[in-house]
Figure 1 (tube, rainbow, N blue to C red):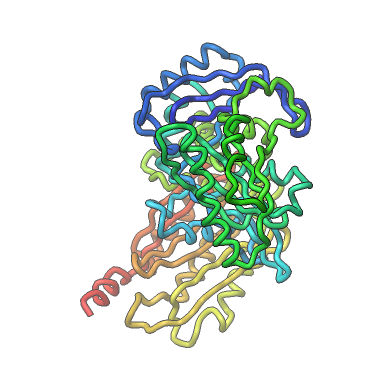
Figure 2: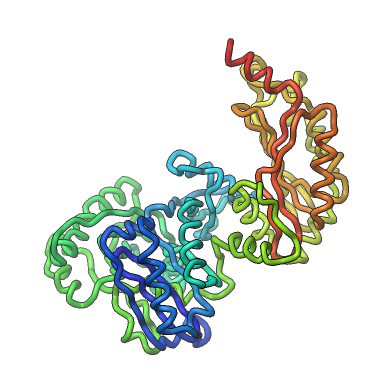
Length: 489
């Protein structure tokens, strides 16, 4: 038996179930534990102690189910945005794109845990994805609470991903322009769908002292949604579907006559699953999470791998900063051992070929940004973007430094990305290798090079297959002085 756990503002909700094959499950029990007010606010943990007590209580009620526990997350700390990515980028490159998209709203964009859901392919070869980012501090709070309760999570998914996966399984919705309204306590999460693709998402706080006012206030969002649809020249919505309300709530919705051209209704998420009469309407995320297949994208896979690595023979340097999670996400998404082994056998010569291209460096070697991404499994290729700016506004980057990094990497370390931050005057390198020894040797050889002033780790992790993924920052000799001079000027 398995359990799917949802932590809302007023309660912890647990669906205990067994898999029924495909997208069907058999619900064996539903348990809940009430939480005090202001313990959890829109998914953010304010007071962990009552939540830990609740988890311990629920675990004692259904101990067998908590041996295979999955958590679904939704809240204000989960950022979502529809993003178009170039077709030349592979999924392992999406993290940087996603962090850039959320850089202005995230408190710590560099350590944001990134995930995505593929929406559609564009005619020009680009791809539409729903990018998701989770603040690392909130992820750590959840992991710490479950650890304190003695529960090891086997998977953690985002509520928005469970919704999208469910909608994609309904072919009848692919030709219907509709808005999906998901109510979780006093939070309304709305998604507009056109041709089966989510084109817009918004999160709204519902206000009201009683259930009637709260339910009716969900209709207020339709005015803004209709205005947005017209501004984007989308097809007018024909249906407004709800998850998280019951039949009594829908009677209140149906009594409104302000939208005669729109059909309102509950979206049946239970399908052919059995035992669902035990599950209340406000436990929808827990139920949808139970439908997620075990191999579905797991935004917190990196945390699980870190926990496993700590229990193994190989120790993780305790001085490594929290940025380790970001590197682990990149490493996990590289996939199977076959892919990792193939990448490790690829030589870095192709990167040097790109460095020889006039498009990368001009005659004065002036660079604003150089980004090199590995974009090949069996045949390595790289996507390089560079542009020139005035030399006196930034540190001077020596071409020799890039060649030095690749040369020292040799055949034992594969460099997957190189970037340069002119504000901090640091070159960031992400790489992967088969042994921890090779990573240490690579870093030590860089430190001994005359061009380099300092090298330090920013992230390090052991992947599920035992390989090492790491990120380092490099300071070239003279960069600090140039930054100081430019600031003085």
